[in-house]
Length: 432
Picture 1 (cartoon, helix red, strand yellow):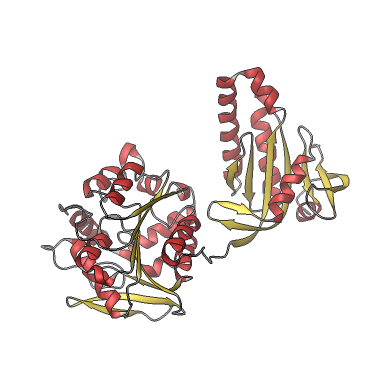
Picture 2: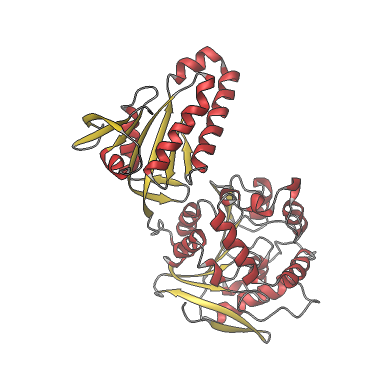
């Protein structure tokens, strides 16, 4: 853990930390609600988002009053937004930053208020999924209880892409406990929502970019209106369904922020991991679509997608993308990938539908929710050699299953389109 320093905000100690080599652009991040920077560093997605900002030059993170390592909130006559805006300004000055870029994923007006109070401290302002009114956000995600709208949990609403991730839910629980005690969090949340002034005040004379995740609970018209309330602000939509950049495709956010703040593409390197890559494809899908008609075919595709998602998730994998009548998925082992392909096939057999599958194991680059790399291409090309009902695997994938009990028939060496050399393929042998 790097050294933690403290800024003085009206007699309150505000914890902050500086990361990066100091070259390039200075960035200050304003985290959402009660997230402490110590806990953000422990999550793979949150830490990747911060690494992307740090790559600009230097990143300063801090805990707002009442959160994490900072002094508790004691003034209940002044709005939380005003106190937290004071904290932000104090950190900029204590860290001796000259007009930094302030990147805020705190939706309830803190960075906007600070920018209106002391615009001379800001070089630029980036707002991620900001709200227009406190009541609007409260209606969407509920109060400080466990349930939001329609009986859904806050996790389902705010972090849908990671709601089924047990490790994330465990981390989120620990982050909540670290950020503030239950009684203090409840009191501060009520205090934040009691703010009655506009969340976008007049007087923001700062170059601003407003970012919106297309499928997030924060609706596009609302976020777009926030941009319209700030003179000259830009508005950009990016893919994703999560409200905060501790879930989903944070690389897309970092790319837009980099272009806005530095005028250059992001230097954030793709994540690289070893994984089993599974490609599947519905056999004779075009003919079946014509035969079934649009409405029935769409119902069959929905059934296919549910079967795929269930089969992959139950084996610890994740669906990267559906390809219309197929899927690209990552799984923790070749054995899991083979079992997923078998499960998909069994789920579809009653509907007279069949798949072909290709599996390879190797390094892939992960950028947010998408993946790339030679291993992905190899798996796709292997699937292209499979016939109806077949699962073909690469030699590397076959070797990875030693001791699993699976057996294979040799297909021999083949040329995979666009890839150099010969690849030895194996066909899953029928059970029994």
